[in-house]
Image 1: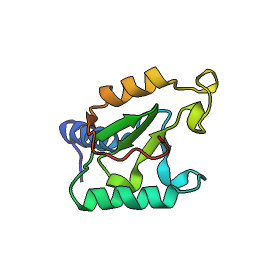
Image 2: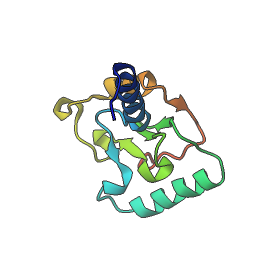
Image 3: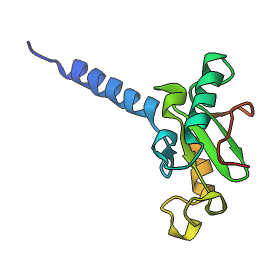
Image 4: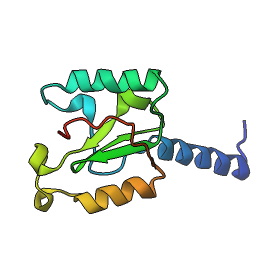
Length: 123
């Protein structure tokens, strides 16, 4: 089967769109991978919010410097967080992505603010 140049361009375009859909901004860590006490209950609560329709894909929220994003693929089960040093994360001087860059990348990626989205580790 011969693939035309037009079809090849279409395939590449579709693959790029898929990669962008799931994209989690740089500097964020998957919630489920963090070795922090209470993480499992936080993940369960996010899953509950998703089932109830309170939160959805491509949404973010922030509280006390902690930023959480829900990517378009996998929903709350793939939630990722950016945690500041006072909440147990690395100091900005040691990070590849400081707070200002992290929040800018979230907005640039098309995430929408949802103030009902629970923010773990923020209290």
